[in-house]
Amino acid sequence: MKSDSVVRAGWPAQRRPWLRAAHCAQLLGVLTGLPACAATDDVLRPYVGYALAHDDNLLGAGEGADTNQSATSRLASAGLLVDKSVSQQRLTAALHFTRIRYDSLPELDNDAKDLRANWNWHVANHLDGDLGVSYVEALAPFVNFHARERNVRSERREFGEARWLLHPSWRLRAGASRSTLEYDLPSQQGGNRVEQTSELGLDYVARSGSTVGTQLRRTRGRYPNRLQVDALLVDNSYQQDEFKAKVNWLVTAKTQLQFLGGLVKRKHDDFPARDYSGVNARAHASWQPSAKLGIALGAWREIGALDDVTTSYTLNRGASLGATWDATDKLRFDALFKHETSDYSGTAVVSSALPERKDTVRRAALKLVYRVTSHLQLGAQAYRNERRSTLAGNSYPGSGLQLSSKYEF
Image (cartoon, rainbow, N blue to C red; front, top):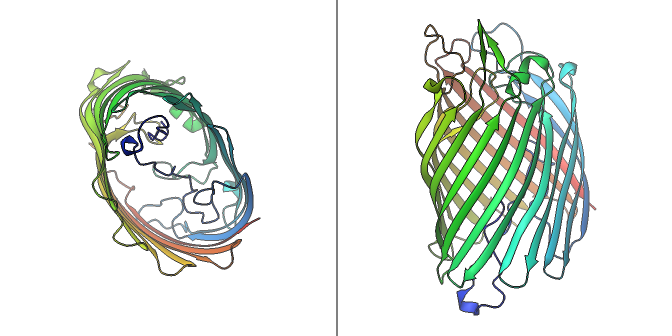
C-alpha cells in the first residue's frame, strides 16, 4: 500500500503525525532513472538520459564456464513526472521509458517501461486514501534462467486504500490490490501469476507521530499455467493469510525505526508438503547524524516469490547496510552492502531425488552523482555480486560498471 501518513487538518497541531516524503521509484542499475522526488511546485518535469553499462557475467554463468558472458549495453531513456494538487486532492504520475541495446548480445535488446500513477484523495478532514495503477516491463533477472534468450517480464498492479481518522489517536485503514505477472518467453510462462490481496489495519497514533498497529492480510495467488513435471501437472496456486504488528517509531528527529512482522500461513492447492507456517518479519532503521550523512540498516526473515518456474517461494533471511553522503552541494555518494540467504522451501518438484537447495548472495555497490547544473546530472556506479548455491552450476560471481547522464528540462 501507499504511505501511511495522513494530513490531520481539523485536529490540534500538537496531535498531528510527522508527514513522511513519498519514496520514488528508481530503475535499478540505471542512474538515468527517475529523479528522486518531484518538487511540490512542479507540475510537469520531463527529462532524458543516456548511459553505458558493462557486466562481466550478465547471464550468471557458473564458475568454470568456458563461455564469455560479459556484455556492454547502451541505454537511452526519457521520462515525465507529473505532480498536480487541486484543493486537497493530489495527482502524481511517473512515466519512464528506456531503450536498451547490447553490443555482443543483440538477442537481448529490449524496450523497458516503468509507468505509475496515483491519486491521493481526501474527503473532509478525517478520510483519505490512495488509488493507483502501475505497469513495469523489463528483462527478467538471470538468477535461475541463464539462457541467451530475451525473457521479458511485465507486471501490472491496481491498488486502492482508504484511511479513516476515527479519533485523534486511532486510524482505521483498509485496502485491496491486484497484481498480474507475465513472461513473454513460452518456456517461462509457467511462472505467470495473478495475486489478489485484501488488507485491514488499525493504528494507534502517538502525540510524537509514532504509530503502533496491527494488520490482517489475505492474498490469493493463481497460476493459470500448470507445469508438467514428469507425469504430474503441478499447480502452484495458493492462499496466504497474515497477522502482523506494524510499528513506525520516531525515536528522535534524526532516528526512525520501522517494523512489520507476525504470523504467516500459506496453503497450496496442490502438494500440502509445500505449505508454510511461521514468522515473517522485516525491520528498518534510519539515522541522520548530520545534514549531509544518512545511514540505514535493514534485516528480514520472510517468504517471497521469485523468477523460477520450479519454485513457488523461497524463505529469505538477510541484512543490509546503506549510507548516503552529500559531500558537497553538487556531489553525492551512495553505498550499499547486502547479504541474503534463500532456502528453496517451496520447490514445486516433489521428487525425493532432488537435493535441498540454498543460495547465499552478497552484493556491494557504490554510486556517485554529480549535479553539473540545476538541469544536468552525471553519475557512475560500480557493483560486485557473489552467489554461492548448493545447486550445481548456480554459483557465480559478477561485477559491473555504469556511467550515465540525465538532463531535466
